Image (tube, rainbow, N blue to C red; front, side, top):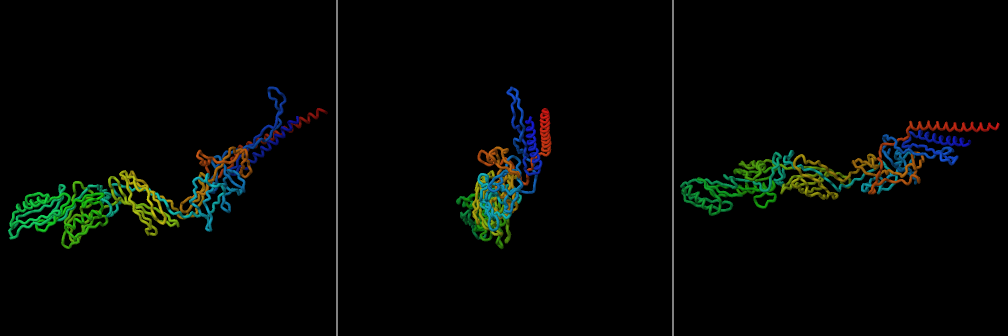
Length: 638
């Protein structure tokens, strides 16, 4: 009969523990990251009354077997503290007091007087520290050369100090990457004046239309008296009249392309006699000619130079100029400058010393320096020549009044300019500009002349010219990389394209690895637990990674209060998740500006408390009932 006393008493003790546990849960309902405890009970012993096949156990009471942890995540709430942290899945932060490590999900951290991240009890947060910050007399300086790619595997686990007076030193630019499309359109919206050294194959007319000049295009230039270009021949017509009897013989004295033609005919010779005699002489010299009744026409294919010493024949010249990317003969040209020199040479043959040909603002300019002589010259189209080129140049051929000039239309060029900033080792900021000028089209490839200039305080520190070659599809062939010598050597990686049409346009980008000196703006922590320092120069440097630890059995952790837990033999050692290659996996997202609330459910806790209280009352009733039964048994003796 006394067994019932023990059953009741053990029940009272068990349910008293249950009430204590649920009361403890309710008291911690506002404790950050608190994990609810759940009491678990078991029977103490049982007595077997018989060996019958049917069980005949009699229980001997209950006891508190264990207190399980409800490890379900609490709600996450926002805060205004960068160093308030929360994990949205499994895992634990490690903190350290002295030499002892503890684990917590309470991520309520702040900086102490020395800048170390600590919790409310002063325990240091443990991180994979890059140790890339050193102190000098002016404060703390970041060592940006430290590799921070995989701090979990390469960093040192330790507390971290995050001071306010941190400087990111300047780093000299050593690498530049430029990406741009030169937009090689057939029509330029904003054409630039052509430079005299540019090839006509790369030029545009005055309205910005592409000339489309290719090898073999030609143009005829004629000057002097009555000379034309027709049927692929330069032709000079010489009109002949009957000679009047004046007591003087007929003297004919001129040269054709250096071949001298000299005739003396009797005074009063008829025009037929003069023409026939001249024809015979031209035939003997191998010079092409045509008789046309009252005149005779001298013809030549590529050039015709007639210099006269008589009154019958007048000076005249005609030259066929052929565009070639690589000129090899005297009548071939490629650039505006070389074409201007051809015109100058031609004028000197007929009007020596009285003309001057220059290139000004992309125009061919012919000046008549004479006070009396006029220059009669003109450009004529050939069967093969490019129409746009001819239309742009023809206005320079003219009868030039003494002291005046004749100008072609302006030839225009395709120019693209880009730029950026680079830094010297002392932090000085320099401007680097890239100017690309379409220079030549040759065998399907396009060559752009690139001028790279580095400017400091309006002074050019360095200038370098490089030719870039693109294939007919607009892709860069060379160079893909350029070396530039400044106060420091710089490698420029080029990712350029040269397309026609707006569908192929590529946006411009410029990247360089130099850094100006920066001052700390703030700290931030990303979702991977990386701690960054942000600076006034818009740069960020990783300082550490907050590791997320895991246990084989979280229920085996020992609670020591203050939301801190200690590893035990039941929980085993803390470890980090790794992938197959050994890379770190957090297993949980780290949220900054957030903390985790308690996971105690008030409704459930109050219900459990009421049930346990009722069970306690029932156990107490068991004791009083047993007492009454014993009292009755004692009264039987009386």
